[in-house]
Length: 255
Figure: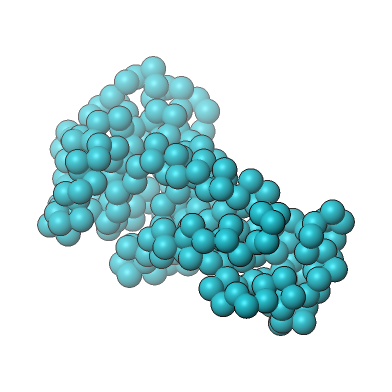
């Protein structure tokens, strides 16, 4: 599996999925110390490096701005190299050829793509590029395989989509997307004032087949509920439905 930060990091940075990379990386999260190289130590790179370090992975950062690099090195325990992510000598010195994951997060799309291409040719197992320009988004699906690019991410786009999901479902505790954005899952806190408190699943979702209550957390225990399961105050309900359709399943817009 990929580190948790790449499975569902949503707090103002980005959220990307693991589907495209899981075939080539089968190590269980937490079982090994992944060797990860990050190019770009700005706000995104700094945050990603900090979280991956907390997960116990070995992080190496490449940054061409010495002040930015020093700020990261003084904040978290990582190795650092001052230079460009497209400089072959710097990449060799950073041991990119043995990296399990290479992530290019600078503000320059072209540099991110080129550094990922070089890293892949040097032997990096997986590469991820931050790409913000819309025209690249249209071309990348056709050239990603040739470039050896495992995944591209757009933090700004993901932040906008996340804001839209929150506005659509304002009472949802958490909103996650799966299957390339085609499926959404939300967590909803049930309290005494909730319209579903005291009601069974089959009465709340009568006639609805596209939505599925997949789990309910109650008193620290996870329950896989049947149709006659009744909600209680303090429950956390997890429900899955096609993207953009969740709000249609809740009479009166209570969600």
